[in-house]
Image (cartoon, rainbow, N blue to C red; front, side, top):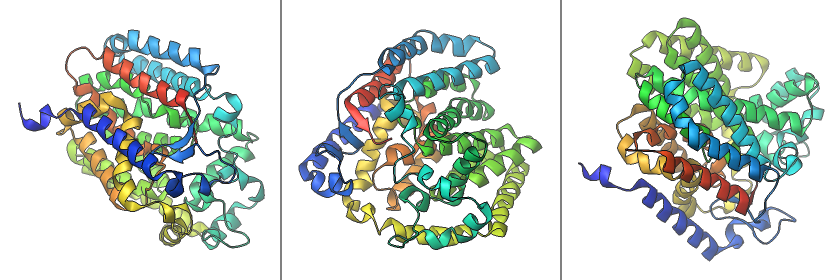
Length: 426
């Protein structure tokens, strides 16, 4: 057995997390905490999770425990013996249940309905967007801060596609934080289908079945309910899965979703690395060409409507350093981000990473995460920002030897601990 396999990924992850907490507390909120959030209590900080120390329980407590027990007890056996489509459907329902029950630990209003209604979020701008054409043509001019009409933090920090989704939802008569929150949850839960589908399409059906219960009990579900990044994760994961299916129609659909993903968040262009790996492993160059053409069509539509992606990107980098990012030291976050990621993926995935070092999807996700980390444009808040990348690490848990039920318990326990001890910002 090679030395790499002997590395205990879970131990390394725990040590990294402890170090990040210790250093974060050592420097305290003077550098990373409540001075940036007026009215926030003194316990509000980033060490490395953005949230407030506030042990609590709620209606979601018994619900989340019941979902966890059910998945641990029956998930592995059902994933292995049910017809694949039924297993995926059941996995999706279980994933939605897990995400919602975790969010309800904080209650319906703070846990779901109010998450996207803060002054910094997307819904704040929705009532003022009455003409989508004007919105797209003038979007870039309102990205920079300290202007009378500057966009709110999240609107300015993302391409217009993210805000457009909530505008369209509002135009359908589904306005307000409750509908927006449930949309993010329902789309985010698609990761529980897309990741196993992609793994199976790459010729690893047994690994896909082993992955299914782990992606359901993904600790990152704490932030899949509710943040817009949950929606970003569901859209891009579905796009990757469609590419992996290698039909003409799925390639075009996958390319459209991945192209639109680039207009949900600038950082999602990095998911192209995963897409390229999928096409390379399956040797489906036709899929690659069709996917690229479909993605380019999305870029062309936005450009025709008045928004050029590169203009927005350059302006958002400037906006990024006009705010809180300027006070977040690179030397800390370049490694504390990875400690944060350890909580998102959980001990089972961390333990499986050394064993999954040759599995293409996992390697691609690691490369993407390192690129995002080194860029300096992901300083803190990666518990939500990296959700679209983190889900592709989950198949690593399928490489763990022997019975995996205790590892599922560890995954569920991680999410329950975080959600009961911290009042997370998302």
